[in-house]
Length: 87
Image (cartoon, rainbow, N blue to C red; front, side, top):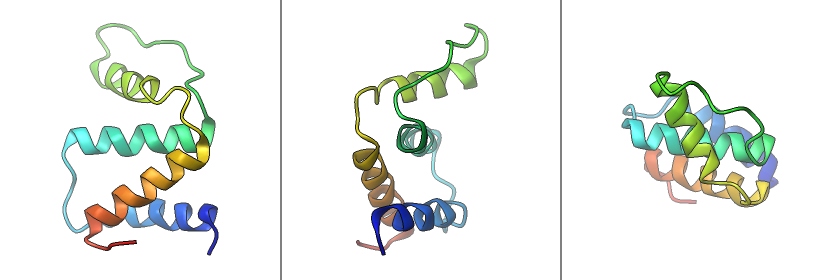
């Protein structure tokens, strides 16, 4: 299986984790997914009172410059860790 297929499987697996990750981990998954699929952040910052959107924006912004392949691999590793599987 190539990295893209492994990533797609990890995305599917992330929806069926044994326990729901905390918000910090969910933000990490979100930002890694966005960086892997869209690259550097490409949207305008949300309003200051939209706290959820602001947290997502900030998490993705922190990954600016990370290559898509690296973000995919970090996502794969994180999902494997969360599901109790070692890659």
